[in-house]
Length: 73
Image 1 (cartoon, rainbow, N blue to C red):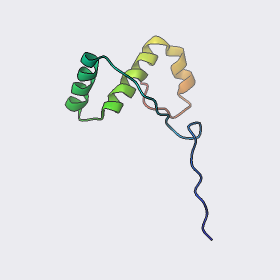
Image 2 (image 1 turned 180 degrees about the horizontal axis):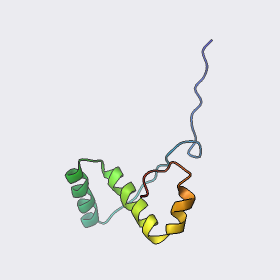
Image 3 (image 1 turned 120 degrees about the vertical axis):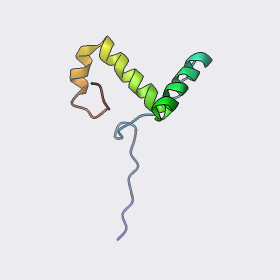
Image 4 (image 1 turned 90 degrees about the horizontal axis):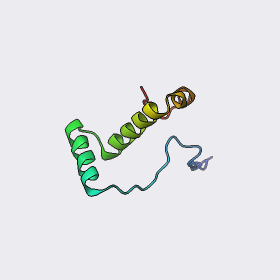
């Protein structure tokens, strides 16, 4: 008996998608970083965002540490 696979919603999944616009110079810099590190553009943006949150709101890191959202430290 075949079972239907259930699609995950954004709340059930591990990631959420969004669209972001960058000034051209910032976009080019992020792209250069990605090429130098041999990682995706998205990886650089996630890493920068996580570092910003860690630096700006250190107490949030301890709350987030129980959830598998990525590297914060």
